[in-house]
Amino acid sequence: MFQQQVETIKHLEQENHALRDLSLSNSSGTAASGSGEIDPEVSRKDRDRHVAKELKLLKRTIEEMELRIETQKQTLATRDESIRKLMDMLQAKGWLGYLCQWLLVTVLISFCLFSVCLSVNKTIK
Image (cartoon, rainbow, N blue to C red; front, side, top):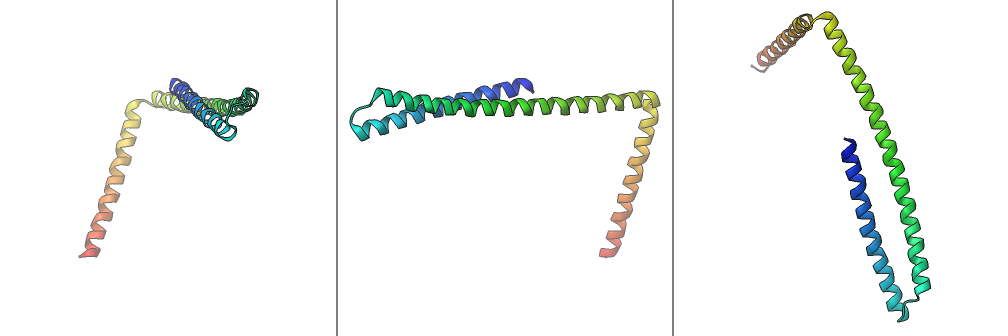
């Protein structure tokens, strides 16, 4: 799961770079068509400002992803603890006891459903 999140982050970074490159090419094209010449200093400042914005956005995205990862780790740890407790209970009581209890509940539920179906069938007729 962690590996998948790392791959997602890499994919988002690649998309971010592609969008940044596209945005930079569009802003350069606008500057060129408007003035006839590209002022290297203005172009560099615009590019630096845009890159700074993108870096800030990327850092915020990474922070959010790290928070999600930490939350998922806590969720998984809680789930693992619940599974461990359930396994301890099953081992303490014995598998046969829980199997019999499960079968009894299943039979009771089936009987109740069957009774309801009969009642509905009688009501319909």
